[in-house]
Structures are given as structure tokens and as C-alpha cells.
Length: 271
Ligand code: ADP
Image: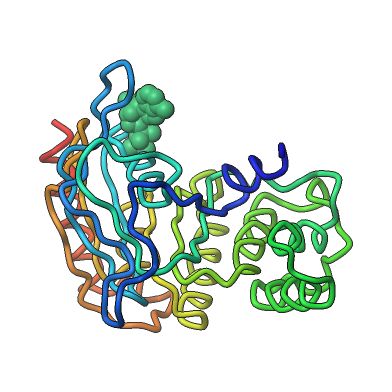
């Protein structure tokens, strides 16, 4: 049972809360839909207020906002790990991956065995588990590291393994809670590019929380800006550049312009 808790809370399987709608949405329905969602914790902290937004299937959207404004809470509401106080969250797909800031690998398991854990918990047989681990490793450029243990890997490599682990369940919706915040800039850029590569290959819908305006704009087709707590979605900035994106496009004037707009909106809500 402990393992199941680890799996649900830490390893990236979204629990299905009673307050969310199931996967019965028809074709063309949004992957993620928030309608007037608010969350007040016991004790009275109002973390999210009246959040309304959608993420289309196959779309990548980021959320930025001041520290403590309710970004992580919003993501947990999306996953069903936290229940809404009012409003409605609906997901168009049941298969949801959740990636946290910490890689949260099991230190006693090899990379391959870490990758096999989620399929194992889902009762997927050994040959299929192996195959899923192998293809996720290949997708994340980790082939050759199967027998390493997490402590033998750099922070960037551990985060790659964490992403690969989530990929083994082939999620159609991915929720990212500042997964690259602890990494140095070069590693972060590299992982941004790898994330975009797997986003295009797997075509999941992504909702990505970050403190970095440039990261948000580089990854996303839209950036949502949250106000200080209680977090409200106060602005939406479209990034007028298609995919695939090349690393040098970080400095594309259109992207910089969008980032400047996000920054300006953030300054307004942070004062
Ligand atoms: P962010 O991710 O934007 O930094 P969080 O969503 O983590 O913000 O937190 C928003 C607010 O909600 C904070 O004031 C935080 O202390 C509070 N909060 C988060 N989780 C809980 C909880 N389980 N119980 C009570 N308060 C919480």
C-alpha cells in the first residue's frame, strides 16, 4: 500500500478525484478544462480563485505566477490529487502523467527497474514492461544507462529518468510542476529541447508550471499568468511561433516579445 501511495503522490500517476469528470468527453473536447475553479484549504488559505481555462489535446501551455500564488495547487487540482472547493475540472483523457521538481527515483532500483515500476504497479506483464522501459529510455537518450543507480547520475540525468518513467504509461496529458527548476541553465535548456522533442513525438497535452518566463514562452503555445494569492488567471499571452522549435529560436524577436509581455503582466500582479 505504501508503494501505491508513492506511486500516486510521487511517481506520477494522477489519482482520479470524485470532483473531476471522467474520460467520456467526445473527440475535439479539451484535454484539460477548468471552469470557475476555486480552492480554499482547511484553515482558510484561499489558494486558487475562479480559475477558468482550457488546454486543447496536443497543446502545450505554461503557467507562471508569483511564489505561493497557487500554481502547484492548480496542478494538483488538475490531477485530482486535491479536490476543488467549487467549480469544475474535467480531463478529456484518463491517462495522466505528473512530473515533479524532484526526480523521486527509488535509490535501490536500477534505472531500468525504476522505469518498470509504474507498468508493474499497473499489472503490465514483464515483456511489455521491459519494452516500455526500453523505448522510454531510447526516447530520452538514456540507452546504456539501464543498470546505473540514481546516485550514479547527475541531476539532469535523474530528471531525464523521471520523465522517461512517466512516459512508460504513455500519458495523453502531462502535468509538470517546475521539473527543471533545480537544474543549471545549460542542462535546463537541453531538457527543454528534449521535452519539446518528446512532446512532438508523443503528442500529449502539456500543462507546465515554471518560474522562468523564458522557459514558459519557449515551450508553450500559450502562457497563462496567475495573480498573487489567491491565484487567478489574469492574463494569457500567445506565443506566435509554431513547432518544432530550434534552440536558437530562444532569441527569436517574436518569442522575446511574447516573453516581455508575460514579464510585464507578472510585474503588474507582483506589486
Ligand atoms: P505555488 O506553487 O504558486 O508556489 P502553492 O500552490 O504551493 O503555490 O501554494 C499556494 C498557497 O496554498 C500557499 O499559501 C500554500 O501555503 C498553501 N497550501 C498549499 N498546499 C496546502 C495544503 N495542503 N494545506 C494548506 N495550505 C496549503
